[in-house]
Image 1 (cartoon, rainbow, N blue to C red):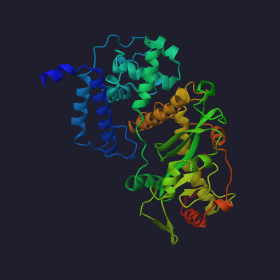
Image 2: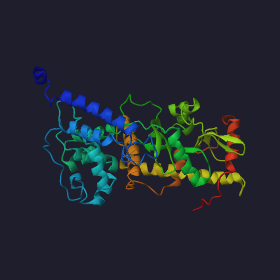
Image 3: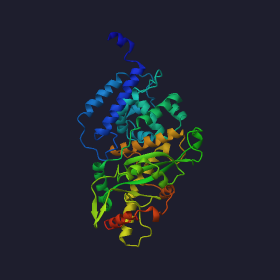
Amino acid sequence: MRDAEKQIPMNSPSLAALISSLISQILIIIFLFFPPSNTLSIATPNPSPHHHPLFPFLHHFLAAAALSLSRKRKRPLPDTDDGAAASRVGRNPDSFKRLFNMKSATFEWLCCLLEPLLDCRDPVDSPLDLPAETRLGIGLYRLATGADHREISARFGVPEADSKFCVKQLCTNYRFWVGFPGPIELESVSSQFETLTGLPNCCGVVSCARFEFDIKKASRNSIPNHWKQSIAAQIVVDSSSRILSIIAGFSGGKTDLNILKSTNFYKDVEKGKILNSQRVVRVNDVDVPQYLVGSGEYPLLPWLLVPFVDPKPGSVEENLNKAHSLMQVSSYKAMASLRNWGVLDRRPIKAEYKAAVACIGACSILHNMLISREDYSAFCHEWDDGAFLHDQNVARLEGNLVEENAFVIRNALSTRARSLDCSN
């Protein structure tokens, strides 16, 4: 046994990589299946207010295992006057919001949560010797401000190669699956929409966001020739603007409908794998299944509600359209909030295609994490309607694309929509 221990020392890079991988997998399982109230879980829109009893023990055990492999840090986080130094948590709260899109307390919490992953995932035989605070700060600064690696290198006092690795490492650590909620969790989502508008059984708002992309940064074979200079992401949100599903990486030139029909999300709904609850609401002798509210050029389907075309003033059809518009506000807020992350704002994303898609995913999960923490540093309450109309390629599709049953369901729902004043 002692001979074996000599052959595989505790500071072996291969052993560190193995334990790091195991820690990552176990933490992901914990987050997905035993989500406490302050984790990054987004599969459950309203997680239990109580911690899972195993989480504190497992979390601290895994953190200790990771930290036992960490090396002594040789380069502390730079102590700058403007508060960019994340080691000065709580000293300059305004700087944290400006440079990291979050409060200092949220930064500290997130650093503690991710430290096991940030500390022991260095390239083999190439230790960065950077503390977790610096690694997280570099990644968040890139996402929050959109700064290039030359600026990051100068601000944090690290080589550009280290900056690129830390950004990639953060986005990789955030690549948790965004699992669309199951039937039980969706009951809470639908009840919130019903409280808002009177429409029962709505499980989310689906729409597409488009982010400008510097196609010159893409490698020659990474994207097709017909691509336009934007990346599209299909997003489903609840009434609080929490992202329930995101699928990114489509050409911005594709229509919302083409994107929807090319996703596994669409196929899963059509096959009854999701939105398949047996809880059907009875409205005017019509069975109303779980459904989404659709914007843009989506067709009317039994599970996808779009507004009426030119309803009569004061009619129940107009009431439904107003309720529909009110529910879409949560989607507008989510898309505008994503653009509050500097890397995704109206400037073209300066990154390789895969890295740009990873940034969209990372900012989406950070968006959810901030909502769960009630930290609205990056949340947007105002938006430009014209920007979203441009994004969604608005069109009116009816006729052959519409299933007859969908008309019946929409007509029934229109009688339940509240009379709303959406002029404000």
